[in-house]
Image 1 (cartoon, helix red, strand yellow):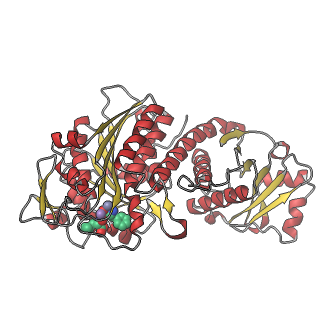
Image 2 (spheres, rainbow, N blue to C red):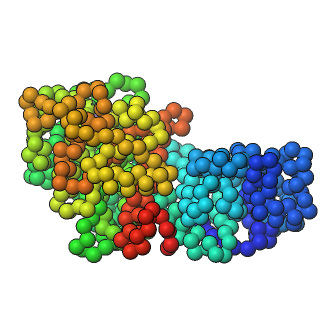
Image 3 (cartoon, helix red, strand yellow):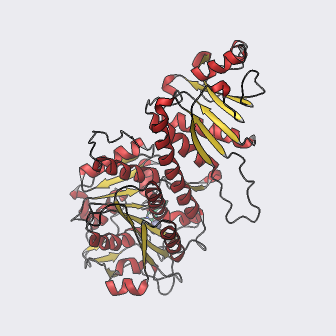
Length: 509
Ligand code: BES
Ligand code: MN
Ligand code: ZN
């Protein structure tokens, strides 16, 4: 599929389908109006007859509209201005794309005149159109014997005024990079646990390094981790036949001396809970417990595609959490790479165990910032549901940057407190720290655990347990939070670029 910005008179542009908007109470947008004039008042008649109202969600596909070059017109209702928030715009773009897909249309021209979104940021509007239409066109069939029908929609054109062309083209490039990162993250996360093992994640990283000269990869096997003393990470994979891996990717987009930003992803390729076995219902969804790892892979791909002038290190702590005669048991005490000992009171709190060693390992890169991304706690779903990622940080400025990036990228996070008062829930009689802190504030105590390993760094933790995948009929990975992370890095790159604009969102590419 390709995206292109086009200029010109909407009625004179050739396409299988032109998409135009009508606002509430049948108010024609400029492009709809131009088509209406060329078609001698055809759309106005449909408004008069009540066939078009402009209500949000309305769609009317009109073949053979006279007087114009487009073979079809898709009229979409834009609703009132307060019905054009991100969530409405996302729904609109998905619904339009679904219609085009179902109708077997090959090329489309979006002529929405910037009216479909309440935000007047053209860069952002175009980028979102690219991201959301791409997301709608993703289909998983890797492990089906009957492959999905190929999607006919191949050319997506976006009509902009000439003055906005350059901005729009920058938005396209960024949007495509992010959309590809999201698709890749979804694809790897959707794979079942018997295919997507720690070694498979390592192969994905190797493939990424083969695709981009700017990415180097190093894989640490169990012997290498043993030699380093990564007792916490190794304790998680003990019960599994699948060997654990520490995957280290380095994206080099800036001078060698430039301190990198490090992303650390939880890569539990299947979480049975271990000896603290999980209940059976929906346990299959624990194949998504590598969603953090998937978002690190996807973000690195996007960053490399955008050639951001930054150094970024992506680390994936990969293991499979299984019960067996060799598995770690409740009460076992392990020694982390940092030297701190941990009493494993619950083997199902394994994410923090793989992450803590990866976070300690990250120190060797002298990071400017470290962000870890993890499907860490069921408690986060109770706190924030399926809308926001949980954000906890030891640095207010970093937290603000991530919240802002999530807001801009429509991939939002919400901050929870990391007060010292919570730390004592992790006290242990037998080790330096326990791996669980009881039922109250489960997301916070998990972050408290991680904070013990990141004291010297500007660090933030994103708990994506509620957002990494959807359950039910629509079961599947979402690719969150590739948009947030990529935006965060885009913003950093822009700040470095010199034009210190307060919001960092003056996107001039
Ligand atoms: N991967 C799970 C967290 C999870 C559960 C994510 C359900 C999404 C849906 C994690 O490893 C886990 O099991 N956490 C435990 C921690 C508890 C034992 C302190 C949890 O949340 O129950
Ligand atoms: Mn678990
Ligand atoms: Zn887990």
